[in-house]
Length: 69
Image 1: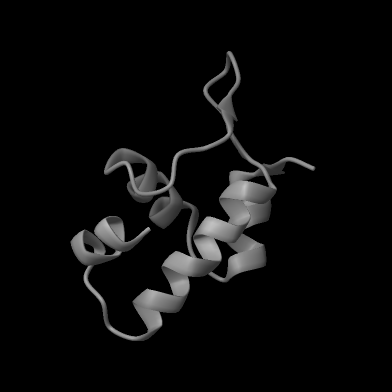
Image 2: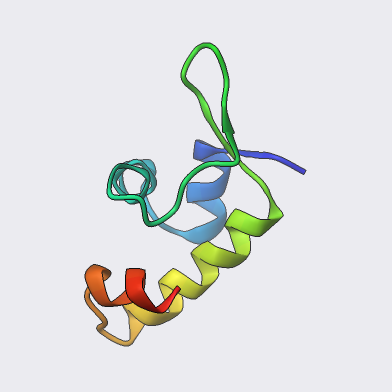
């Protein structure tokens, strides 16, 4: 199943802007981007996002999370 950026942000309780930022810094890339530029995330990305949020809750900086995951 593929999640659009809005669906994933609502599911995870974070903003779409945060997901775009994670893509920008290479922390969480979408499964694919369609011709219109819409990002779509699969199950693998959902699991990775859960890990990222786990470490963010514990106060890890994004650079450290990037090296962990």
